[in-house]
Length: 281
Image (cartoon, rainbow, N blue to C red; front, side, top):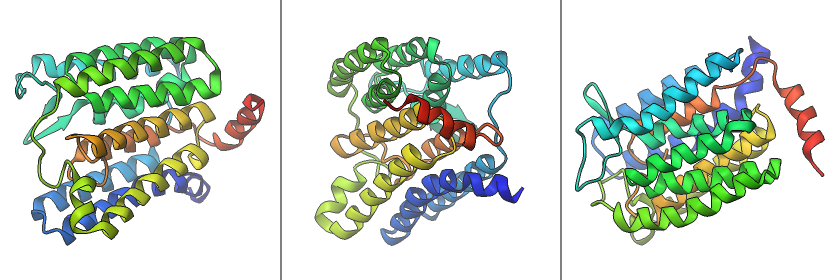
């Protein structure tokens, strides 16, 4: 158990650092206590999964998870939860989850571990993002594809990245909504009122991206795809009115990235590092 926990410490820290920084931001800026409780509870659940989580041992189980996650990206179209023609949300009892932030992180990891169908997974996700529309999800797909392409050199992933770029520009023009306090425009608003806090939150983001890309106990392509997804989400959170993923109010990205970081093969690290060495030119 101790070895298992030690192996997963980088994944735990990659999620905990930005989320705890976000909790500190919520408390410092006087956010409703409910926001702090929701994010804290989501972090506890996500970290528990990272500790006990596992990678599906059979292809059929992995495929079932992929189909389920893709289905969650399309579920908003039939959920009757929309605003100004934008449909990105999933009903979850008293809460509403952002479908892209919840489902795509794990899809990025599973696409990287199923490379033959990775372009199909990413393109299907991109179609959902375009229809919602959700530019943050679009840019997450763009940089996940770019990260995986850097490892595999699969030209199809390069095409997906290019298509995702132009599609995301269209999404950004069509899908911007009024910002929600403490959830969106967090960094942009803090730059003027509390620049040191804004810088600390950005550093927490960057630290998480680096830890995922370099230290998470996954194969190199999976790490790069997941880190790229986080970068894409964070970039749009800075540029427009999209959720400030992990650092702002919202359980969806905490649960989504927690689930993705828990998709770890038991005792996978040595094998992963060996495979990494084989893929580096």
